[in-house]
Image 1 (cartoon, rainbow, N blue to C red):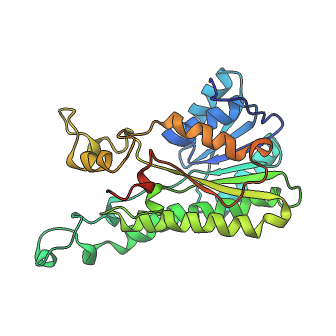
Image 2 (tube, helix red, strand yellow):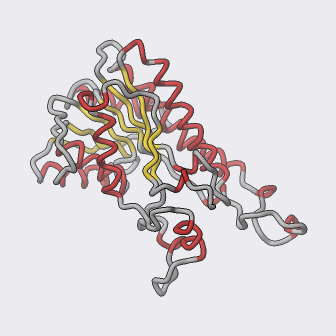
Length: 282
């Protein structure tokens, strides 16, 4: 894999959650290409191992692990195996997260009479769905950090990278739980940065903007390939007037996890969103 610039992560062990997904598998490949030994964690071990196999084929060192980021025992068992295979964790990328349709409203705005219509309004949001989204994003970052930061605090020179979102700056319509959960990630990133500052552990986050991926294809594109109304609104609110590419997250990630390049940077949430979070609409 060709990196956007040279970063030396030789001798480092990187643990990446959600690594069976599109974004974090790309980050895993980049971190491995920079020389780190990479542990790819995912609920689906086969997916994680498939990406690990690609890394090994390209000359890197990687292995896939089954791990439930919401299960402390699962994380403990995974951690023990990583210690045997690679050693202590130097870099943790908390990539597990996502949204759930049960936590979304059907409409952007509440209009009088909607409460009696056959639609999901704010009042009909599913509690279990909202809790799932908060757990997956916040607890799915909290618990892995609690587990793997144990390797870091007594050594220093280590760091954690969380995945926030541009909707942590300005909440998006229809997805109150996801927006709130990502805002919590940004706040937690700052809290951790201060808490671990005396132990020499840096904590930062990236906040991706809109990417067009297989997961959100139906929301962004009609069956005939034309953009949906939501796509039109997204692009109109993005000064660069396009979607981002997964590979465009790599440079910021490598920069922030590099002790040489970003050794005095902690508590930062870096938007990678084509200007979306900076634009007022006027």
